[in-house]
Image 1 (tube, rainbow, N blue to C red):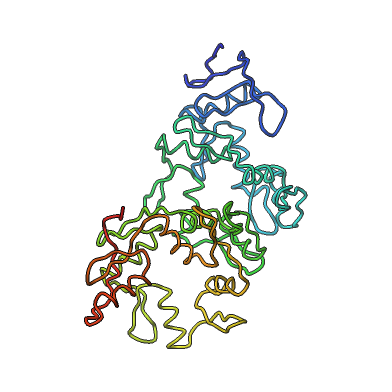
Image 2: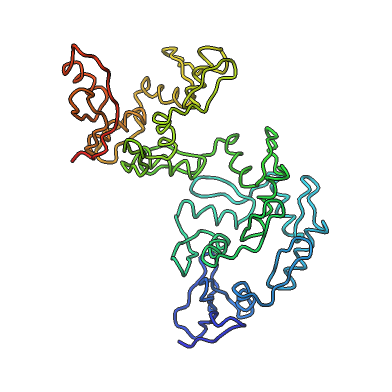
Length: 409
């Protein structure tokens, strides 16, 4: 296999003479020319030569208005159309590099979505958006980092990731001096100082600083939940909510340990709330009285009970009241005999995440509760209370619910 150096960077080669011809996943054109820095492939040598400038400091063309740099003069000219407002959307005022980009954008206002996902039925304005979305279902990540082998579903994500390895941060905030690897990151950060929120929801008029946040917010109105758990029937509107659900509900891992008593937790939020037991911190204060609380949930419950502020979520069947809507939803499973929380170790299922969490201690051998009289360890608070009554019926000192720092074998 012969390799021929391209451009000014010795790390960029072609594989035109190779028998290993790779086809792009979305067309039938063989891509003979490969960049050995990021493994991106091209159908023509000139496209590879243009791309190669991304990996070198040479032949960059800088915008005089925003300091953004481009690896070809034609890209810079197209970019300047954004500043001179040549292609401006009459509805939202957003500017674009070309008329085709503006035409594509207008479809977001018209609601015209011609491309439909065959898996979930979601519709898109462009075929490229559908192609990217389809990778959520297929799990395909065709763009791989040659340094750490991390894979991505979009080439732009790989390009952004490569700067983790190079450490390049050319864009500096003029207000606080923070540096960024991309001009778009600096633009988003600058809105923290200016308070600008250019992306508005057409349903409730809530405004956002990033278009991605608006897209995620729209799922509140559409009810869309594209991220589905493979272990139960639960779905989520955000990917990190699914990740948290898997870690909290379907995993026994507890990577967060309390530095005071050794108790371990599945999430950093649980640990943070627990540590306040030791420190005595109560950061949530009532605006009506002098009471303060360790958690926001405790404050909400106090406001409802003592000051009649807020909204109770009441069960239609038994009229039991809850502070959070999610707690009411979990409670309703008991009436419907629905058990969506399945143990990953055995076939048992439960109607609430709390009951599943308690059950998982059976498999882990985890003994969390200690008798304050004799020091015997128990997995469940209920049983340590029963034991304590028998252990010292004449001397009720209370239960010490401290975690045993030594993991029970």
